[in-house]
Image (cartoon, one colour):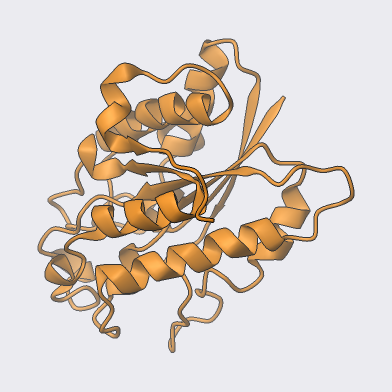
Length: 230
């Protein structure tokens, strides 16, 4: 049984754009990914740790517990042994309360990678492989999300390149979700149900590669691999 942890925010929690409702597990991309892997004969279990508003490494002055690095090592310890950790964070780094750039968010991802690898897992348990997923680009925000994300569509420019560089330096897989999906026109931030399906299927291919299986050639342009920096 391959055990996979998804560490993410509301895009993966499955919030339905324009509402406060949540898609069911089998319609969220982590559920789609699990089903796809199982359909290929790969026994896989996906654990979701997805919190609305979670950032990479920054606090939210209005909502406690949104700093993604706080307690991350214990989350890894809690779910071990793990074969793969999928991290899809960054969108909330660009909320209007923050001045962050794509490079800032990428440095946050680098800190999360280091935290995952420091986790105090039990003796003999593996340090899991890490897959970094770049969230799709924020469109001009609309609806209730607009004040919180005002101007975020410009501040997040260059995110895929910045994440790819950090992933290469740490020897991680990196997948640009924007290569296969887009954010919803309803709010410019989250994913519509059909995009969860598309992303879940694509990430099943990448997870399969990360677990030591063959990689779909059609995804080569979106997947980066590298040796860790010396």
